[in-house]
Structures are given as C-alpha cells and as structure tokens.
Image (tube, rainbow over the protein chains, first blue to last red):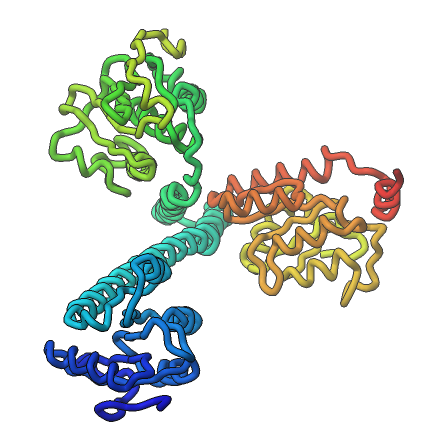
Length: 405
Length: 160
C-alpha cells in the first residue's frame, strides 16, 4: 500500500473544525491505532496515510495539514525527511515522530533539527497531548507572525505618511510660493505704474495685498522649517552643547547687541544630538528670551544639570514670562499669544524646539510666572560614554558673552 | 529679444508671468537687450548644444549667463544643469539657478552638479528687482570670463 485515505477526501484548506493529519507510516495497523488514539481523545480526525517521499509531496500539495505523524524509520522514507520537504515547500506544519524504538540521543537530535516532539509506539497515550501541544505552539507562532506582520505594516504605513509629508513640504516650497510671488509682484507693479492715477484707498488696499502675500510666504517658510526638523535630524553623533550655544549667540549677535543682553553660560555637556538642530534649539530659545524681554536689561542664563540618565538644560530669562494656562499652548505650531504688532513672528519657534527635543528622546517645558521671567527646560539623554561617569560637572559660572555692557 | 547668436543671457522659465517679471527687472537695469528666453528644459539644451531649432547657433558664442528655473516641463532644471556641466563644450557657461525654492536638497543637488550660483526669488517685488539687478550686474559687468572659446577652454583642460 502506498497511499490510503481514511474517512474520505477533504477539500483543500478545509474548515478549522477537525484535525487534518498526514500519517507517514508503512504499517496500516499502526496508522489505524494512532488515528484511533486521537479519536478516542476527542479529535475529529481526517487522515491520509502515505509511505514514500513522492506521496508526501503529493499530499502536501493538495491539503493543508494541521500535523504530521511520521515513523522514524521506514524502508522508503526517514521521518526526518519530512522536515526537509516541509522546508523546501516553505510549510510550517508540526512534525511528531511516532516510532517503535528510539534512543534518547537520536530523539533529542530530531527535536533539535526541527521535529516538534517524538512519541514511542508503546506509549501512544502521550500522542494526543503531544498533538495538542504542537497545535498550540503552531497557533502561538502564527499569532506572533501575524502581530509582527501587522507591526511591519504599521511601520511601512508610517514611513509612507512621512514620505507624503515630505513630498507635501517639497511641493509647498516649490508650487505654493510661485503663485504667491506673482500676486505680490504684480500688485506691486500695479501700484507703481498707477500710483498717481489711483486714490489713497487703492494704495492702502494694494499695501494689504502685498502684506498678505508676504506674510503667507513667511508662513510657508516656517512650515517648511518645521517639517525639515523631521527630515534632516538623522545624525546622533555627539555634539558639544557649549559650541552649539556659542554658535547660536553668534547668529543672534545683532539682536543681543541692540538690546544690551547679558548671556551667562555654565559649562554644558556633550550630548547625542544633531549639531545643527542643537544650534537651532538654543537659538530659538535665546531669541525668544530677547524678543519677549521685560523692561529690565535682558539677562539670560544657559545651564545644564545631570539627573540620572539624562541632562536637564535650562534657558532662563527675566522677560515677560508665560501665564500658567499658556504653558502647553506655546509649544503648538502657529500658536501665538500676542498680536503681530506687539511681537512679530508666526508662532513656529517653540514648536520647532519641541520637535527637535522630542526627536532626540527628550522633553521640553517651561517653568514661569507672568512677569517673573521664564525658565525653559529640556532634557537630552546622557551620552552612553558619560553615563558611567557619575561625577557631576562643577558648575562654575562664567560670562560667555560680552555683548552686554 | 535677440537672435540666438548674440545672446548674453539665456533665461529658462516656463511661466509667462514669471518670465515677464524677470524681463521687467532686467530691462530696468538695461540688461535686457540681449536676453533670450526658452520655455522648458529640452529647449534650453537644444539652445546650449546648438541642436534642433538652434542648430544654426555656434558653440563659440555662448551666453554669458544662464538663468535657470528648477521646475520646468519635460526636463527639470537639475537635469539641464547636469548635462551642461558634464559636457566640456558647455561646462564653462555660468549657470545661475533662479527659483522659489530654497529646499536644502535642491541646493545640495545644484552645488554637487557645479552650479555657479543659487538664488531664491524673493516674494517682495522690490527685493526681486534688487536681486535680479545684483545678479545681472555681477555676471555681466563684474565677473571676468576667459576670452578663449569654449572649445579652446576644453582643449586646455584636456592637456596634461
């Protein structure tokens, strides 16, 4: 006998009810006993019995089996060959070796090579438990694979939406600015050419139109700057925060001099961060401290202290401060608390700060009272190398910037 | 406009409104006498490589300046820049990108391809005019170019 069907043929990939078993066995009586044993334990068994490699391949091509019971050593087939066939066909069906006599070394070796379990023919009482466990393991493995697939899908989806966003930013930069320039330029040309022929109201309207277009362009630029934070911040090389602050101060020289600002900076650590983003972060915070100054000469102190696995930076000023109810709001994009005539700007600076900090795995917040100055604080993870070093840096104050008086 | 062999400035711009603005700005500075405009990247290459409807042009009389937009139909500005800078017959022609974008990736790509200058068109028209004036004066008046023909320049480069 080379192949026999017990309990009739089933459809390919049949329902989940019932147990589909492929028995690789040359003794029909043994196969019958195995199947009977499973039935006795409540399985509704649909079994096919084969005894050659060709038949195994043939059956596997037609039916989705839940489990394979293979005799360890048949004249024409070795039980372990079933594993090779499954691997070739990329199938994930548990194989239980059912065998007359098997040394424990060989048994362990079979399991190492991928057999799920082995059951001795004179201990067939174990068979049902073994099959149950194999089914459960398969179910768990499939479940795990499903979750992993879902995760991979989500990651891909996220990557796609990031790409879309990037594409949007690019399109905004190119395509939205063009028509804007046309509106602005031709309104200005109109104004120029017909100035004497138009009345004062017309001139004012033209002024508004140009102003609107210019403002929209500034908004687009800011939106782009915001979206760029996500795109260019790949580098996690170590950056010296002292250098970043110096750079930021250099970029703000004019404003610092004009307002007679005094900036004090204590020694800062080196952190895993994108160098340019670190400069931008300090520049936005120091720039804000200058912009939202109070009546007194602006004083800004930049410092950092080690707290566990992270550095907490602080940019403290004596400016107008932030009311408690606005402390979260100020970090939202395009959120402004003042009119443009009071303080210019589009409300993007702090949103960019937040994005930079969060992208590096940190947090940003403000400690402040209205009229009492602000202390903007943010965290960066400590560099792996200096985590071992528990010694805190000495916080010796020194004046970093002589732009003040 | 002028005949293809007397061109000082080749303007590559697909938007008629944008084209007119640039011409307007050049005219004010008396830089528009020898300006020739093409509308897409393919036409720009035909002009610079003296092919197609510009097959009568000579390589010996290249424009002193190419003002190149990035977003162009058919062949974009970067592709035009690449072909111009890769070919010994045209690589000495100054190419200035004139675009609304100041996307870092456009800047990086342009400089990698050997652009001579990159200018973002300002939204404010006065600013735009000043920018075109500065760029025009710089490339037409201040900048010195070799008297040799592009072929002679290329031959000199080929010598050890």
